[in-house]
Amino acid sequence: MLQTVKKYQFKTLGDDRGKLIALESLSEQAPFDIKRVYYIFDTMPGTIRGTHAHKKLKQVLICVSGSCVIRCDLGDGSPVDYLLNWPDQGLLLEGLVWRDMLQFSKDATLLVLASDHYDESDYIRNYDTFLKEVARGK
Ligand code: T46
Image (cartoon, rainbow, N blue to C red; front, side, top):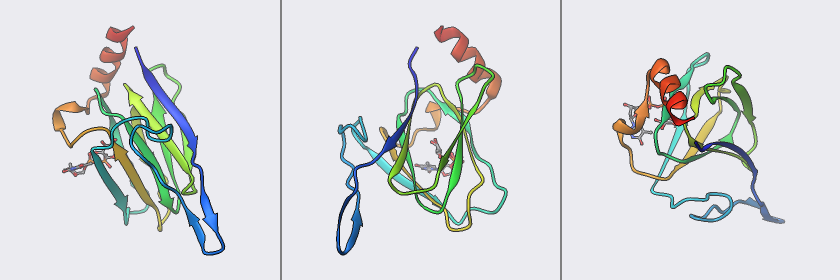
């Protein structure tokens, strides 16, 4: 069963005017066809978002301003925290990964590139169901 959490250091294009990062579908940095982009901002202090997994959706998460933590749980009892605090960092989530997003700074904007359109039926929002799906895939 494929469960991927992969950090990216994006290539920054820059000159005297400043910096620019370009992300394209099916490139190394976004290795899927990007069908949707959304972003999360103005998050209340102390908020924990996410708390779900996806059945099929692939996503790349980028904190384009400020910082936040992405807690990734593969169902093995050892969740790992990834700090995103610079726009040249990305995190690819693919397969059964239970994710929490937390510790948002006041100025945090979390940009997400997604491989598909919004579909509530792709979400696993119950943790026990998630663990069963992981066990089933082994
Ligand atoms: C994920 C993490 C990283 C839509 O109508 N369209 C959309 O494209 C999205 C993403 C959400 N929504 C609706 C569904 C809910 O009524 O917006 C509301 C908030 O969504 P949710 O509670 O799922 O948001 P998060 O921050 O917990 O999770 C989001 C994504 O939903 C999810 O796919 O992996 O960010």
